[in-house]
Image (cartoon, rainbow, N blue to C red; front, side):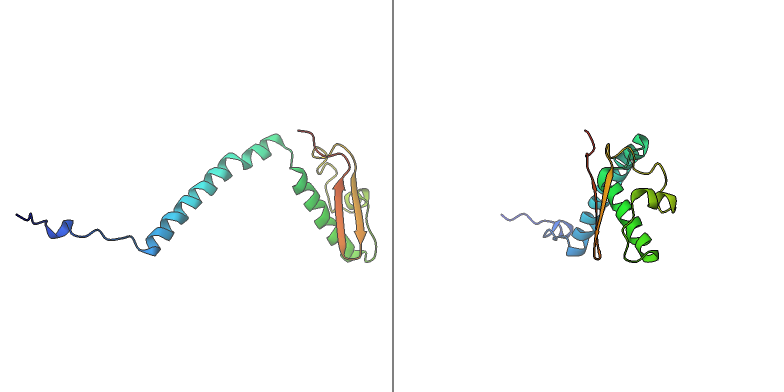
Length: 117
């Protein structure tokens, strides 16, 4: 004897690709929100920018400075005196002096003594 199943309990429909993508996007968005809420304020609270961010900021300032002074490579003091950087910028991230090397169109900024952990 066969039991009949009501029509509303019929075959299971598989979710569409669009619904799956929306669900994955929601999960990724929630993860990004949690990361932004948890991690970013800790850097702000510490008042210290990570070394790679500081080096990238100095490199950007050097490239901008070179547009006004073509063919020259500035020292950190020149970037500060010309107000491309703040006087206290990044002093906590590197415990030694920053080194700026310009070769052609390439700019390399490094810290001689990296941050201590």
